[in-house]
Structure formats: C-alpha cells, structure tokens
Length: 110
Image 1 (cartoon, rainbow, N blue to C red):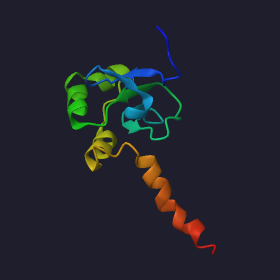
Image 2: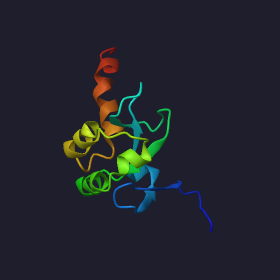
Image 3: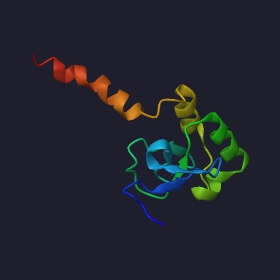
C-alpha cells in the first residue's frame, strides 16, 4: 500500500470510518485524573488520543457504543466535546477563526 504524502489515517470512535487527521477532532482525557473528555484543538496535548468526526451523528454513536471509556481509559464526561460539535458542526477550521480574533491587538500598533 503506497502513501503519496497523504496524512496518516485515523479511525473515528463513533462511526468507525477512517479519515485524515485534518477532518477529525482529537480527544484526550482531562488532566489530573479527570474523567472529562477534552477536545485537543491543536492536536498536541500529551497522552493517548481518540479521534471523532465533528458531527452530532458520530458523537451520538460514540456515546451509545461507550467508545470514550474504552478509547480513553475510563473517561466519560463529554460536555466539552458536545459543546464543540453543537457550536458549529462545519467549524473544522475553528483554530484559524480563533487566531483571527486575536489579531486586532497586533493591528493596534499602526
């Protein structure tokens, strides 16, 4: 099997379909032994990660299958993930939008 410079494939814990890292959300268990599942927007947080399509359908499937607890060693609190997905299902580019809201500070140097 040849990889032509494509991103590595990850499997969604909801629908079990493969996708590239750029189209899936990376989830990690909260720090300090917390059972909360946190969205890793920058995909750089330490620890084991799980991947989920940013859709309510995949979220519902993951909850139904109890996939969070299996993928992230007992993690169960999905409030952060639910907020992220319901805030804008098509908001895959959220880190870019967040970066543009910070820029007015640097623009005030004119």
